Image 1: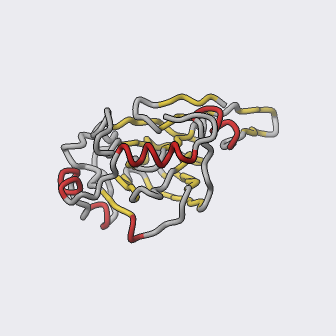
Image 2: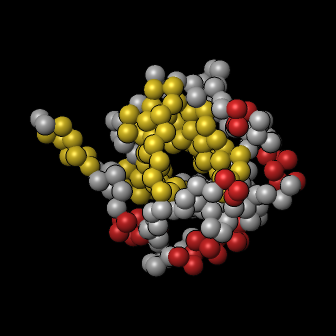
Image 3: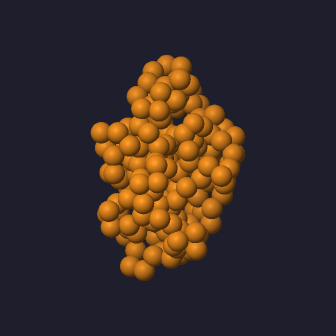
Length: 202
């Protein structure tokens, strides 16, 4: 598999090698040793999620308190989405920036994002199924949202009329979350991630 760092530190795009024959296709969509070799740390798996969403659904922007935060390894096993990583870590060189990666059931790319980064996606196909590998279990007392359509973030969602959950629709703005002191701190996130690395660091 090919691992490419995104412009946001701690986020990576993974492109697997697909083996095709008349029976179908086989691929390794996650390998701990490849992750460690590619960016210094494997994913500590604590929970696996499946999300099924209709066309034009936008989910996000979600993040968790660090430590322990929640690293995610996301891929689209059916359909097509645009996956978005947002740097919400106060003090980061790319604070406030976002990057989009297309995920689908053709190229079967994945996104691995470290603890402290914001995450969201929008659905381009009639329906899409995403799988998440997560480093920690869901803890609602430590989970936060930022409104995905906040103009201060300026995310260019490629949908005309986004469909949001009630939770995301009611989410505070980026500025409000920052003013409340709820955003992760870059140096704390960096130190936490590097404390678990075995072959390198950011």
